[in-house]
Length: 221
Image 1 (spheres, rainbow, N blue to C red):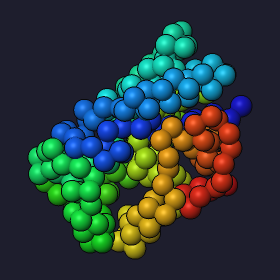
Image 2: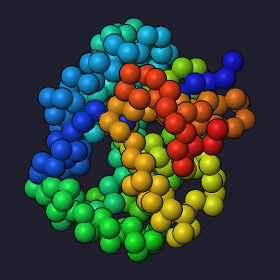
Image 3: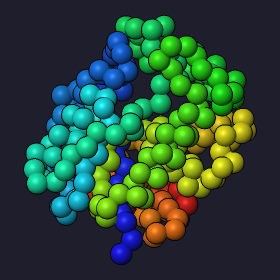
Image 4: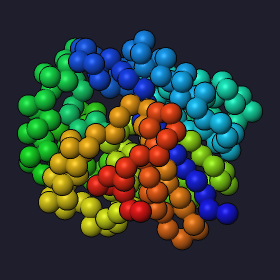
C-alpha cells in the first residue's frame, strides 16, 4: 500500500496579518488561527499513524488540536521549520512590510548559496532540509502521516519532487519565488504526497476543510 503524507501549512499567525514579530520560532497564532486549527482538526476524519510538527510555535499550536483529537497517535517534532533567509537579529520587532524590500532583494539576487547572517540559511540549505524530510518520511514505518509545517518548506519539498537535483540553479531559485508569490499556499492548506516505495508524487492540494483543489506549479501529478 502506498505511503500517504499530508503536508499542512500552519494556521494564521501574527506575521501573516502584518503585526510586528520578534524571533521566527516564537511568532504566535492569531485568535482566528486558533479557531481554524480547531476546525482543521475536526475535518481530519481518518486516524493518522503519525503526527509531525515543526518546532516553531505557530506550527506546534496548529498541530495541537489534531494531536488532542487523536491522543493515541504519536506526536514527533522534526526539523521542518520555515525557511529563514533573512538574519533574525537584523529584523527584531519588524513587520512583513518592513522586511519586504530586503526579501525582494534576496530573491532577485538568485544566489542559492548566500547566507544573510546569523540564524539565516541559504536556499540550498532549505532544499537539503526538504530532501532530508522526504527521506525520513519514506523510511518511516508509519503509512499515513500528517506534517504540520510552513509554506516555503512545503513548497521546497514539492519543488524537489518535481525538479530533483536541478533545483539549486539561480534560474530555478527565481522561478520558485515567482510561483510561490503567484500561487501562495494558504494557511491550513496542504499538499497530498504519495510514496510508492520508489518515488514521490504530489497528488493535489487540499484546502482547510480537506477538499481537493487545483494542482499548482509545484505539483507533479
